[in-house]
Image (spheres, rainbow, N blue to C red):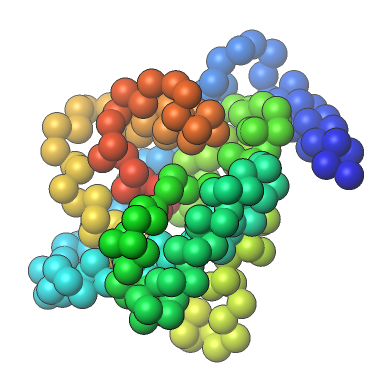
Length: 240
């Protein structure tokens, strides 16, 4: 079954890639991508960033950390799903243990109790990484409105990520929206400290960070991550 899925996805993405460009360039849609990036950057500058600064200013540090812990704990669920698909059964057991411990002893994930029990948080796992481990090529780089940077492979994997995210199944519409906004604002607030020393061409910098970080995650660190550990914060904020 896995072989059939891999074959179908590989054929789909290779076909789309062939239609998109005939060369080996990673960014054949750069003109379009830059336009969408400019839109996202403006939305960030005039809407999300001011809100994130306000959230950071009025919310105590321990509360912000608790919110971040809660969202990270929820993401252990799709992480375990992708661990299993990639054959990482030992890691799936550890990530499952983290989720159970933090959801109970950690009060629905507000406190990272598992970390103090010798179970540190592992790198993120999503369906785009799973496809990469199965041999599906990246495809061209793509910037989506609001959702931000992707590769064609990651964009195709996004619906599966939604399905495996427990937040998708919150029945109350207003509560669902409020949680999504809080998650986005919290992630953006944590990136405020990373904005120093950004050069004039933000588009190129963000593209290179995204592509190198995705390659690092797909290969489980078997490549050099030249941007360092600070880029871990980008895992939860791809939108801008």
